[in-house]
Amino acid sequence: MKYTYILASEPGAGPEVGGEGWQDYSTAFVQWNESAAKAGILSAGEPVHPPSTATTIRRTDGEIKLHDGPFAETKECIIGWYLVDCKNLDEAIEWASKIPLVACGYGSIEVRPVVDMSELT
Amino acid sequence: MDAPEELHRKIDDIHRAEWGRSVAGLCKLSGDVQLAEDCVQEAFVIAVRSWEQSGIPDNPGGWIRTVARRRLIDFARRRRTQITSAARLLIEAELNSTTELDDSGVIDSVIDDDELALIFLCCHPSISPTDQVMLTLRIVAGMPPRDIATAFFADHEAVRTRLLRAKRKIRSAKIPIALPSAEKIEQRFQQVHTVIYLIFNEGYLASRGEIAQRADLTREAIRLSAKLIALAPNNYESHGLYALLLLTDARTPARVGDADMLVTLERQNRDLWRKDQIVEGFNHLRKAMARQGPGKYAIQAAIAAEHAKAATYAETNWSAIVGLYDRLIALENSPVYQINRCVALSFAEGPLRALDLLSDLGQGNILADSYQLHATRADLLARIGKLEEAITNYQLAIDQLENGAVKSFLHNRIDQLRKTQTLKD
Image (tube, rainbow over all chains, first blue to last red; front, side, top):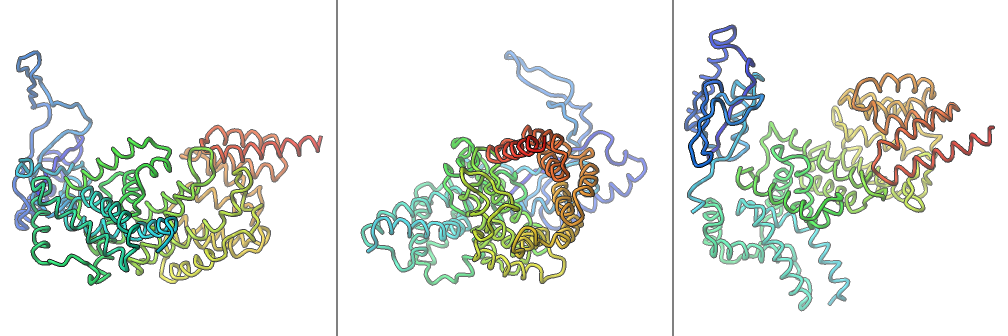
């Protein structure tokens, strides 16, 4: 069963890139990645740049229009994602709870089941 | 052959006893709560028709499960695409392995584990608390959505939609139907206890409407609590919860008086308390208190037991109750416990001391404007003869309330105080 983890945090939460505590924090991420890969649950995942770098695309009045910024203005911003393959929601929650972002209390993770296309046909 | 009325009463009992375990088995097989529920529902419809003709079979639960499983397999054959591929494989494997579908030979403990897993599923922390309550009532207790709606003063269609959405989440997010891991199980039991306690409380102190108590919900909570103990007797706090519900519910015949008026503990006729429930409550309380560090339900049950032990209100051991509240607050510092401790203290050490404590309690927390705080202050003020201030506080309490029975109870208190005032003048 595939799940996506959508990682989000408030701007300024957690150590700054290259700043104090950053080394330990990023090492913890690398360790999580390694153990998840070793357990065979990790399919993919990447961090993304801040919302100020986002471009949102939408068709309005029959035309593709661009909009500077994310599609939703929220307090928390998406900072990355993972795609995992777990036995069930309990296992997915178990792994997600160990991701340094939540384990250190810097942000939250939304666990979303991925639609199995083979079951839609 | 039973008379029709007797037959339907028996079928009701069978429904209550077998619903949860039957849904649990099919759920495990198909991974789909809604489908499992539909099949068991259909099996009961078929059962009623068949049993009216030929009487109730020796193993009605096995009969229901056999028919329900056939429905599930029929469904899997007809609509191959509508169930998950994993479920399809399971069902096909089952179909190939057994030609005889009677489960009378199945070891009971296997079904017990399935049913316990179903309870944990309904009380899964990824489901909202309200949905946990509704799912548990529907799927474990077999309560029809219409009855759940009535019990919670909700719209039938809204309850149905909520249940459907929750069941869809279980299927889509693949919330497992399994016993939690050893490290999580204690926490998950707590979640189940909370759900059962919420159901009981909603019934015991119906938060809206005009009636004082909803026996359908209190009874269902007690049944669920008993079921939990039968399935997992080694969880001590489950015994504590069961004891608390029994000892509290035992007072019901004395608690709701004429015209549905609430009667305070002080004025209740203790001869009306249900002795058998009290005895049973004490038995389970002993089990819960025997372990190191009893939980919050066990301690609340111990408080209820102090009341049950006292022959009259005047003979209540208030200092023991204050001590128990101290233990409870050490576990969980809830403002409601603080208020109740205050009441106990007012009898152990006098109302003045309790009033002092109460004004400290009401400072800047969620209780500051709660009816409990206003009503307790009013009671204490009345006891020291400050009647006008007491009336003002009762009025503040009434303004916060939605339950008609509690409101009219407080209006009654005001009327009494007014009478006392005129007598004094």
